[in-house]
Image (cartoon, rainbow, N blue to C red; front, side, top):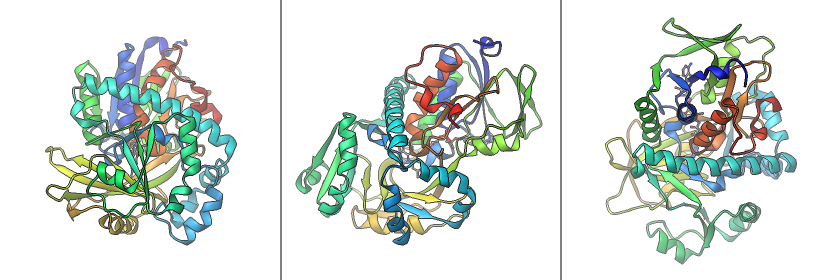
Length: 426
Ligand SMILES: Cc1cc2nc3c(=O)[nH]c(=O)nc-3n(C[C@H](O)[C@H](O)[C@H](O)COP(=O)(O)OP(=O)(O)OC[C@H]3O[C@@H](n4cnc5c(N)ncnc54)[C@H](O)[C@@H]3O)c2cc1C
């Protein structure tokens, strides 16, 4: 333990699922925590996701076979992956991301992500109970749909890996799929029911409930945009848009897709930056058709969309359609094409009423080259801790990240192996 973390005082930047989880876990270990965000808790990426918490999410997008599939995906304009010219400006990240689509990286990442997912699911189950929002959590798994036997056969490798990791799942015939979800059109030759999965019916509300729990237990939340950080002889200073300068021995950067921009703007000496890419994704909400229900989120593998049954803040049922990956610069213009294509595809599969005006949303999954988040202290920068880069699974793995980070910062034995997540690997 060094002189900074003996003081057990920290500012956490970013109140998405990851930042709020870090704040909660550190608070539980007796740290005095201030949480800062430019908006309310859970109003950005942690608001807009598909709400799936699943053990099956241990396979990153950059996996062996991506190189082979890439020309087809790009030439056929696959709904799973759209590449925009602005993504090429991030070529150092893109190059490293593709370079990691190989067996050696994949093996390390799947083992590491599986451990983080399992820790996270157990942590969510406890925290949801403590925050008294059990009504948001649904324990019915999720479904992957395959339109023909060839598509199902091509998922054999993925299913084999999930079996190796003992993920509980069942292959469904068209009849057993209809028995489970009677309103899904009988268009699918196969489905896989991932039973080791939960879903959250209002992701933003869950983050807010965790943040309320943190505040009730004495934590401080400040709404303020952070412009930069500077290193002091003892700790860190954090500069905000309101002109306030906060001094702190320890700082956690958990600003999701904005994390790297903050470090870049802060001009740290000998900057140790983690290349960060943006796997952007969209969502659109639909009114449900009366009497038509979906019991769990579904992933249509040919349309590459997820349809999740959800509730708005008034508790009214709605359906959230979310899209595959658009590789583009973080702030590139909104391009509704992927969303329109997903809507055409989903309407052939599930009855929906009109879309809800103003519901279209765009977010960016923050992704490191090896698809593993960075969780730990920056080498050579005492008291500067990172917790970002959670790609497709940050809503689920935020909680485990908080637990792991709090153990590292408190110099305790860790629940899972921290080395695959260390910022030192870059
Ligand atoms: C379409 C889509 C579907 C997804 N589906 C799933 C899913 O089903 N399951 C899953 O686990 N994950 C899913 N994800 C991924 C998941 O949403 C992200 O990995 C996760 O939300 C990242 O959380 P975060 O806390 O790191 O970032 P965020 O939630 O984005 O939080 C970052 C915070 O930093 C704040 N911030 C930014 N700049 C500043 C500043 N200058 N000063 C102060 N604060 C600042 C923001 O306001 C924000 O609150 C999905 C993502 C997308 C895009």
